[in-house]
View 1: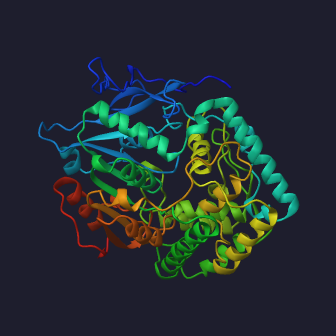
View 2: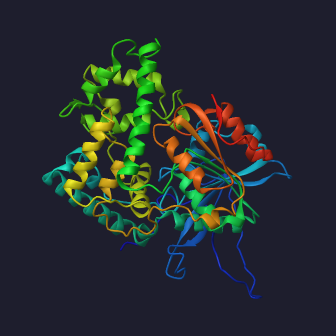
View 3: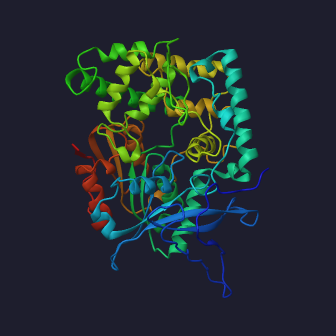
Length: 498
């Protein structure tokens, strides 16, 4: 296997962790901070050397990148960790968005906390997962995996792609599960000298939050899980829960488009237009610039998967590259005229850091979820149910992608889905679980199911659309801040409108 490496090193000191000092007491290093970072981010950055395998810490390590946006107050509430989910999201990418004009954190929150971002293992600047981009660009269509030939093609791709990740990245690919990641976070907490782990996790970052809480219940401070994932469900239950919530969000978009003149397809029968664009056998051309190549042909499956991610916010968030519904309707109108460029999948390229998030997505998911699918008949059963119950998206969603792509993946399922430990979760202090009723990616059912496993948690609902709530800066965002800053907890099952 090739040695571990960083694509873009930062100018800071890497510090290793040791369990005991000379007197037998725990000895934790401090992180040496550099400001500004060598990559131009206007935040402090540093490295912490952490084990590849926490069960065998002397068998190799890598440098974990840590970032800090420091408050000016000396009486601050401490450090607030955050994770943007994915899996594959990195703190450095979000700090870069802030540098490019995105006001992601409110001044009130910045005045009360040091914001701590970690590029999780295998992501960003923390030894990113590297795979064969040319091979990745040949990823077969999910909907074809239900027949013998398509299944064989998918299986061959999964094995070859996963092997390329192992060959090009090294042993870290075998330790990308969320348990390993939260153990990294715990070492950062210790290095910072923080008494409690205050945390805001969004989307798949809620998996990290609940895993940390189960593992270190006595260290949990104020914790927000925004856009929740419930890891009790597996197989078709997980796929269809997401597919159903995605279709509910599609319904919201279609209704908006029929009634709001700002939609480019206003009163033109957008449901029928979408159905025609995504019909079986539909292929549209795309013409991307040389500097940002994409697939030259766009299938109905491509459109459905891209559409799910484009629904995540009704209003545009340019700093995060999120278009909003008005622009999305313009893109659909262009596709209806025969130009699907903006719905095409970007091609992976060698040495492009943005692609590592796409690679680490599968490396994490195949160790945290794996798949229950083993044969073409298994896939066909799921596709048949999806086509029946969610005809607009045909069951296509992120968890179907995971379920099919993890078939034949070369690493072990090390952190399989299960319910949280009730004894340990009873020790966790009050936390806030936040979800929109019409989130296209993380179902309100998951938020409710997660609440059932955490006795001291509270469900806060947003009666709206879009994925997660804090960065939309409405009443739900304010409730999140009130809890983080002064501990004010809304009543369980409170419903807010923005």
